[in-house]
Image (tube, rainbow, N blue to C red):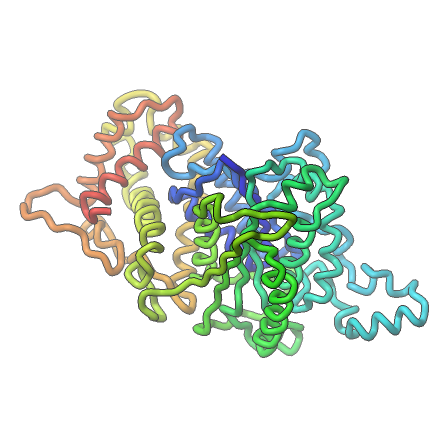
Length: 488
């Protein structure tokens, strides 16, 4: 199977990749051998980026412990560094580090002070004084004209050359960006241009020029609170989007540069704190970002024959939007289209059911169930002290629960699960979908039924490590429980 290289540009790109990681952890199938996220964001200190990097590193560590590729965390996710032999030349994280942007203003980056009078006059026509004084290590804060200059270094970077060296003929590329800011609006056409115009000495340049490229561009879906100290003003989002769309029509869709282009936005919005500075940009997870992650899955499900490319041009460009079955400010699975429910409903419900057991039942009953200690390897106190459980899985699951919490409290809200479930109403945790009822009032239910299925699953699996046994048992048990209780 082919690899997928995902370029996540700016804060929106970061958060869409986070949502994608949640879906992959839950077992959503990508039909890909390897996923290589490459995050392009000069704002390296922002909290969204830090949270996503931590999430991806935990995902990677969990996947490496598992051999069963049919359950949770089955998709391999890796950094570009892990694909090259001389690892010292690249960052060990999933993030591409732009050079010469740390602690520099844009005027320093272009060496404005050394320009002669006529060139300074030209620069003043192209860039305002505020543009020239922009601190670039917090991103391009709504200035794609700055971003397009700085991001041109990408084509000469070690990351781009190693991406090219590892690109094979049937690999695919996906680009995530917003259209109403600075980094995303500039980064999408810049990266796409470097792909479609790849020439020697770029390795595998013919394969890259004719790659199957998908992209999603996000229209405004949130606002920012007024802040006279900030250079970001939500009143400009629509005008910037219109300008960018006009450019894309001429220079991207107008020349068939993308095989599949997805558009997504929402006019039901919430204002976030307007803080682009050091440590800022910590936006709550948004349903639009989850929908954007679905576009990547959709792209990977498009058959090769529909994605032909010749001389850097798509033979049959595909354009898609996303819609809801019912337009509500608070969504659950029943508000989504049938195909979207087919992709999301069972995997997310299965992973949530896994979390409910761990959060409410696992540690208090450790060593008290046959599936835990009937045979080696045992699920005991020693297992819960391993880095796999204590550090990576527990950390990832905290991210998962926080992600759901943020989706629930955003606007528009996505609330697929109830937060008021316990041992007495465990299987009423999926909002809008009622579980099957037993006709027999003495029938086993809740954690009694859950443990029964875990015991059955434990008899069916043979795993060389406790981590593999643990994850395999829960995947099999939750799969059976969802079929029994919901016919998923």
